[in-house]
Amino acid sequence: MLVSILIPYYNDEKNIYLSVSSALQQTYKNIEIIIIDNENSLVSKKILEKISKKSKKIKIIKNKKLGNYAGIGRNFGISCSKGKLIAFLDSDDLWSKNKLKLQVKELKDKKVDILFTNFKAINEKDKELYKVKSPSTITFQDLVKSCPVCLSSVLIKKKCFKKNKFKKLRTKEDYELWLSFLKSNLKIKTLNRFCTFYRVRSHTLSSLHFNKLINAYNIYYRSLQFSFYYSLYCVVRLYLNAFIKKYTKYD
Image (cartoon, rainbow, N blue to C red):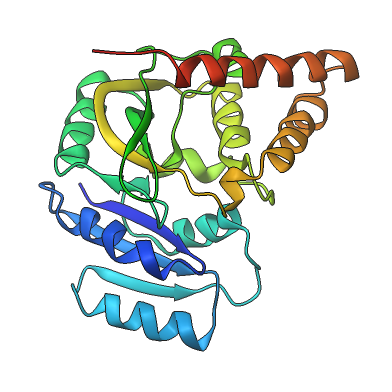
């Protein structure tokens, strides 16, 4: 079964080579790698053309009009993909070599729509900062309270995107999508293995906590149509639970 790996790119020359290499080194070989050029500059063209020479499995597509919205770029990548399964890998994140092999088998065995893994957060020097171990099954109410899903860890059946897509958000677009999936009664489970390495950087959108707070509030208030005060409560609870996850130790 072909897995389409989608990697959005924007001004990340330092990490993109490592990210693509971790995809190419997968023990599961039936893959295509689609890099979405959200930067769309002469510099990005040169970098990505060089990377594409690493393997015939790599395809570069240019996001000419959509702007630097990683989620919208991923929607574009999905529309260009050929696989029945979709995997996301951010340009600064990494996978263990057997991630896809384990996930494809688990997805078939458990008959679920979306499968993600536990993950470890690393800094720019590859030092482990914290790790997140998730419950085996996640419900909509569970996800409203806490989000243990790392975008780069997921493997999703492509058919799930017929009715659900990433929204035009700077941050939290993945969280909004997981909630939409569960509202559509799709089944999400965890592969209880640490197969994904999420890089925490000091100068990326992922570190702009104010934007994340605002977008989390908008998801609760506008997308889920919670009340003003309950939405505020949910934001506080979400980030409190995130703090607890980061500092919970696992053997």
